Each structure stands twice: as structure tokens, then as C-alpha cells.
Image (spheres, rainbow, N blue to C red):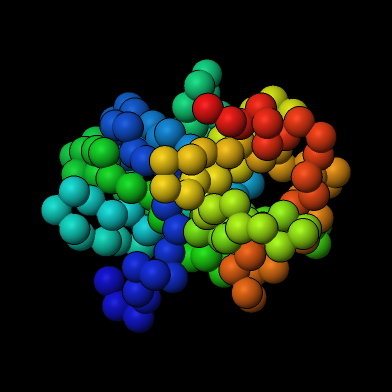
Length: 178
């Protein structure tokens, strides 16, 4: 692979195994929808051996709890088999925001979290998806706080300064006490 560095790529899925004889891949998608792959137009397959290959996306469609992906240039079971368990990556700059107040998980991981009053709570180490909204897992040492990703709680996200400001909602920090 030439001209691109791993830092410019983002993991958006994993190849489970080939599907059929024509080079189709059965994949587990980490993206919100198959539109992520279509919008990117190109994916990079990163094998366990460290090889990275670039492929144009021909199609992606859901099938039960996985997706089926057809890549241009993968036309047989044998060529698809070499990508079993490979990570699927796209360029970070291929991601598109639908709203100004929308952030990608990779941007939030590592942000320092502060109360509006200035008290430091910890760092976002994980984002948990739920049915209605995400939950930010904030840790400082052995202390863990779960912050709901809702406008009533998260008042500011400053990616340039790598921090998030939250409003202390009554009982929120008490619920997180161990």
C-alpha cells in the first residue's frame, strides 16, 4: 500500500469469511449503516499478516445480522479466502457528518471530561451504544462514571482542546458512586 498511513484510516468492520464462489465477503460492520461503505467508495483490507490492499466497493447489502460486500477485483472464492478475518478500513476523511453536533466515536475517545464548574472527572475511554442514546464511559483511576450522550448533560464538545463539558444533573454522579 502506498501513499496512505494507518493513522489516516479507521476500522469500520471485519471480514467474517467468503460467501459463495464469486468473491463476495460476509462482513461484520461497525458502521451505523452500509452507506458508510458506499460513501467511502473504497475500502482497505488489512490482513492478519499485516498486508493492506485497496479495493473499490461494488456493493454492500444487509443479510440477517451481517452484511455482504462485493469488491471490484475479488472475483473468486480463492481470492476472497485470503481476506478471512481481515479488518475493513476506510479513510477518516471519507466520513460525513449529518449534523454539526454529531461526533464520531474515534473523536470522543480520549477527551477529558469536566463539570461546568471546572471539576475534572476523567477521560472518555469507551462509548456504549444503547437504543436511545450512547453512553460515555469516563474513567479516572479506579473510578468510572457513565455519562448519557444527551444535550441536557453534554453542554460542550471541544475537539481542538480535547475536552468535554457536562452539566451536573441531579443524581447523575451519585448513581455512579461505588
